[in-house]
Length: 169
Image 1: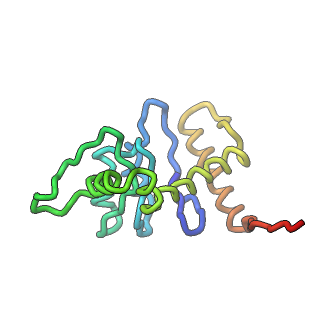
Image 2: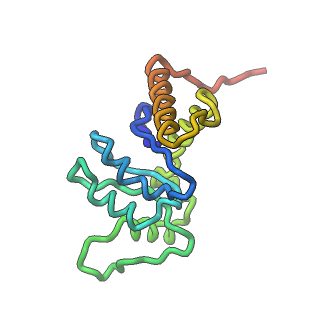
Image 3: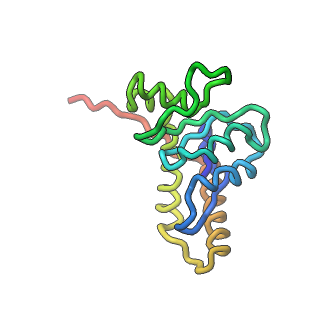
């Protein structure tokens, strides 16, 4: 799912076979989103060259998209600081992690905002259902698109407002 962080709208969804990696779907999903994207958050499975290439040259905008993707544990810097070219975003993330630690990097980079998409997936499973009913992939894709449209309409009608209540004895 690609989710607008500001309002929780599902911008685009994709459904693939288990044999297809998530990172290969980033560029096709970016092509479907016409609005400007400032940053993309994802887990370590998105730490691939094809994702960084797609974010450097996004389809509908001139500015690159900031990757908020933690490099893998055994990651190495690709382009060192003495190079005349601009630093690579992945290398900058890796340097920051080495300097301040992974948990501090996650807090400062906004990595945890990706949980908004995870929350939308949990909402989908809870409201629409944990499994698809169609048998063929093309029909499953259509079913999931309909489910996402339903969630977006429900969100536009109103989301619950939660707040902490102090209880005094």
